[in-house]
Image (cartoon, rainbow, N blue to C red; front, side, top):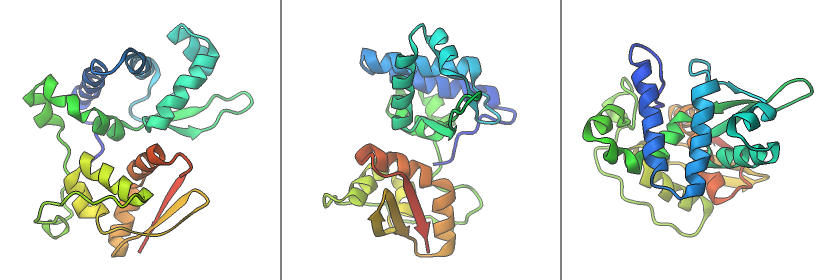
Length: 226
């Protein structure tokens, strides 16, 4: 899936599309998840720097915005990080607040089941491509990818989840990855070529890590080599 960058001439439309996807998704959740999504949207619309992908706001400020105490802020921010929607870029330190990025591609993946409710024009506009233009047809498989069979292992379950999100991306990049080892929170994978490994490391490692952490929170890194 290509990251939906809100830049260029259509930046404003893309921003509205991301917020629309969050709204449609949130309306289909229970009241607790709805409130979490509304709080994230408050951060996005008031303090998020779209161009630099930076959200820099102290817990006290967030508590005022959300009309809650700082304990609630800590709890809710942790939930958003666990979802993979918030990514901590810089931890808090004396005299300096934490900096977060927002994983817009992961948000769009997770909200995809609600897109059709917004309308076919929305789906046509935001439907991601599995492989970026210019990489050549030889990279994209001509066969549909069958859903992987889970054997109960962490990687097999992660492959199954990825396939459900993006079957074409799975067939092109994830299906041929093999596990080397898992230890000390690091899952090491091997790819069939250097180009393949470089592409996965650059474009898919964060998505894979989010999926893996949802299955096993002890995973903290994905390492891909050829």
